[in-house]
Image (tube, rainbow, N blue to C red):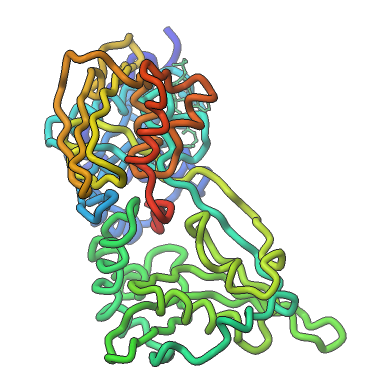
Length: 426
Ligand SMILES: CC(=O)SCCNC(=O)CCNC(=O)[C@H](O)C(C)(C)COP(=O)(O)OP(=O)(O)OC[C@H]1O[C@@H](n2cnc3c(N)ncnc32)[C@H](O)[C@@H]1OP(=O)(O)O
């Protein structure tokens, strides 16, 4: 018998937590010993009923957990999503179906709870497509050569009647959640930040790796905080007495367009700073276009970010808004769930009639009418938040058109004016 083939997969008991943390760290190549304080801190983050381990001869060899999150969809509504994280299989037990078995169990729980989708951030691209996930948002990270960049004159003026001030992390704890909720409401792909996120970011709870960051807030003309930015700075030896200081943006959250412009302008005009790393922004972030020379923003990374798996197609498609006219589109969705032992029809499988009212709203119900488009659940996951193009997937042969121009119609309905973006790693 190959070791681990018959490992027991189950949710955790209180007494399993330390062993589970060790296994998760081992899988992520983090030194495995965690002291009692760290185990206690990790315990405060997990829901035992949503945390699984695989146990071989009594030792935890694989980890998996999920958390509730509200995911913003086009139009601004939030849908209940299951956010999967901490998926790790110890190298001694890899490729024996443990991740697949834990995924099948977690997806079954999510369906039973009535979650509309499961979401995750994939460590590596090839892992999750087989489980019905598709990349639904992408990110770009730019490195800006600041001395070369210079602000475009059109944006160098006064800050729209508002002002930027430094803020303490304690102040961030007060105004931050409200600003972030306003950003979420206008950003498909964003998820809520639970109170623990704010406690860890502001240093109220200092876990392994915490460091103090700089923070500034933008107040609009009415005095309300409309945005904030958190950043780190790394100073290097100054060659020939010329500054060489790098600024890394950890979080730039703006609830208004003016706040977004003003905060970037603030960062780009700081003395000494020679390089700004933007962090993972939406690929259509405004920052390169604020520069007199957008080429001074070099794309360091452009990659998939939030992966999405639909669990309830009618609920998901009804919850979001659509551009375009009143029309109908019949989607045939292929879906299979693999659990390491075999395959079965997945929750997104079926044929669905999407009818839009031309004002944004839509209904979606199962139908037996002939399909206009057929595609996999993973590819519907790519289209759902508005980022991917059905026409592009049709060129690849991943979307099949059974009615002329059906992919074009899908794009008219599904695509969003600004690209969806998930600002959070989870
Ligand atoms: C949301 C997150 O937490 S992302 C973090 C994911 N974790 C990591 O990357 C940590 C390091 N890697 C690992 O811990 C493991 O290798 C995991 C979790 C990626 C996979 O766990 P395993 O138990 O080895 O996967 P499992 O045996 O269930 O594989 C299922 C299928 O996925 C495939 N697969 C698994 N991992 C990968 C991978 N990294 N790349 C390509 N294919 C993969 C397997 O080959 C298998 O394919 P098959 O069904 O055609 O035979």
